[in-house]
Length: 495
Image (cartoon, rainbow, N blue to C red):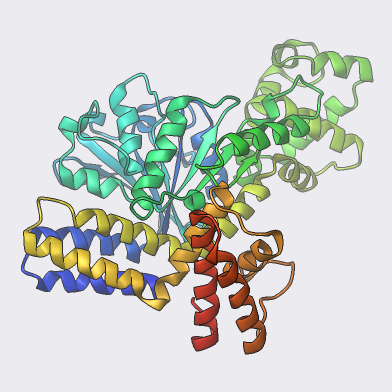
């Protein structure tokens, strides 16, 4: 892929490491450079049965990832863009073997090797979503087998060498899987301590030493449709719960959004058919009393005597949930009769577009800064690695610091200062915060950044005056803003 400005500077540093004379440094740097050259790596993580793989399928627009427990759900799976469908099983001791997707287009239950021997699955798909993002589906945290949970920690770069399966993973495997630039953390209806710990560890891994930031972490409530009784609108409850999680995780995530994951997967993958629409049309013709009884519980929907077979109703329930069925019947009664019309209604009610919009704005649009920041953080930690020679450590430490001082890299400082504001660890006066967010986010709709030198100079002086006697965290953000303005005055942009 074509490298952007910040990423190209990081790759240049990595390539120059080859001339230092330290083969361990050269090897580590080459692997960091390889990750920077790839699209932004987005890991999807969460507890077992939290809806991770369902969300992955919704983002892909294909039902590829298994959503019930199989051997594949115990493995880290990387989804990358490719011209043809291909599944490679990457083995821990070297080598790969290729397996086929099932006739239904899903990963097979058997990958031809014991899970203990598999490092990861590499899946290539010709889907548009993967042109800008590599998506990593991880095993659930707190898996029944500790090693599977540890695989997730390794995929996020948060695993420890004493994890349950660490003895099976050499340093190369750990480094190879710990390459996520950003994470979507999936929650059900409760927040647990190990989830918070894992998010915090990921932030520390991908942020500058000493200043972990939430800018590369999003939370998603994937089962919003299950938060209320059948027939009730789940979204007010889901929005309140998301707001509560956002408050409790203000230091860990930049946003929490609710979604009906199952409904999102079905409509995004084109799994709603004209036959489904016909069945719902028959159900919509029931009298109100019969319909209320039918939609009272999932068991009632599957078993009551109505003019649609139990098998068809079970299939609808498995793909739409009771909330989706109720929504679709209401839409049929409102005049939407075709599969296309009902799909449009269900897509809107799933709120998948909200998740995609936040992913685009928070991750994809900032991919260059996020990737460069994560890579610099890894290189900075590498400079303390005793497996490198003393000369290699000194060279790398100096080069990382010099690159951080490069004016072009100031976009990373902006990104992390924004994270400090978002997390509530720093504050600016209301008008200055608005101006700073305009500086960092050129796509904001509340007005442009001042463009004349006089306006920029005046704004820069306001930030500098505020920084003079502000609290340390607040002053740091103000100084970042003042430097952003100075750089715009001298070369037009920091990006």
